[in-house]
Image 1 (cartoon, chains in turn purple, green, brown, red):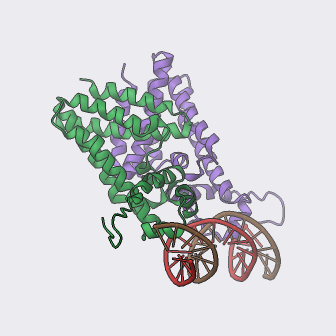
Image 2 (spheres, rainbow over the protein chains, first blue to last red):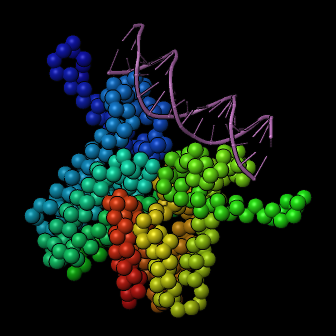
Image 3 (cartoon, rainbow over the protein chains, first blue to last red):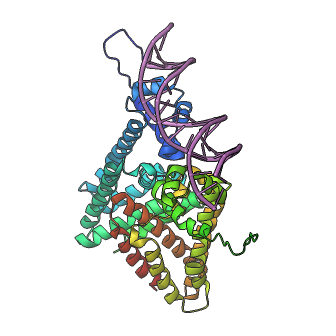
Length: 192
Length: 192
DNA sequence: GTCTATAAAGCGATAGAC
DNA sequence: GTCTATCGCTTTATAGAC
């Protein structure tokens, strides 16, 4: 990867930046993630950061959010909507979620933003993320035999339980809370 | 509580300050709750605030946290531990929680602090709050007939569901999520 | 006990050299 | 594309008048 007076210029390193930014936002929250911390985490000076993200911190958080949303869309939501075995898709969701959140050691940035000071700033994408999660899961549950109302209630309960488990795991500093919640969820989701 | 050069002077207004501070912290998070906002919400200048809380924002948040903890201890935890009808105590917990969190319109400050930047600052009281909640609820469940392990799992699930419901209600800007979660919880907790 | 004024530090963001 | 230097503002916290 080179600069090459002209032509191409992939600047793909920009994409590699987002996961780093995500961890800073997760660890310190939106307001706690100062440009100094971000600069330290990425090894880039403020000048470079503003070169990549002219919109500053807001743009950084927005793009991180979009990347997370995209990951869940392809890895979690889409499989739930696919017309395959719905029970297998639900099981895959649970293992995927467990991996993504590092078995409870990693917090949900979307939830952090929802509770934080900047919630109004990101209200729309935050709402959309959870709405699509619930809808996708409800679709799978419906295909597995539940009626529409039960599927919606059970999907909401699942999404909420995952968020709560992450909060409690962090609060109690005990990641195992998350694993227990996922196990409980599995039996609850796959029950008749 | 005394000053006494001049009789009385209870300075009890200090206690009346805490709920106001609590709402500011809830609404803006710990770092988002600037002294300017706190000054505006309380109608007190910075000088007065530092007169009441020489430790500044940290002390304010710590005392608010202690007050919340005390409220839950007397209104929620203690009844769960009392040797009365455990099922009635659990039902009372749910209605008390619903009232405290304004049916989902109010967020849990303890959870906010757990996820926020200042989590290390308040790690001990935050952990203690959730631990005592779970223990008290598990005791009631045990008295209602469950074995120790089931009681602990079900209590953890309940505490986590309440937190998750508050997160999701805020994220989706739909307080009714909370009411549905409490209803679901009632059947789950009181089930055989 | 309450205020205003101010100190000292950190913040996000910008400018411009290289 | 990356850096340093710096601006303008806000932050927490303190000092001191009243």
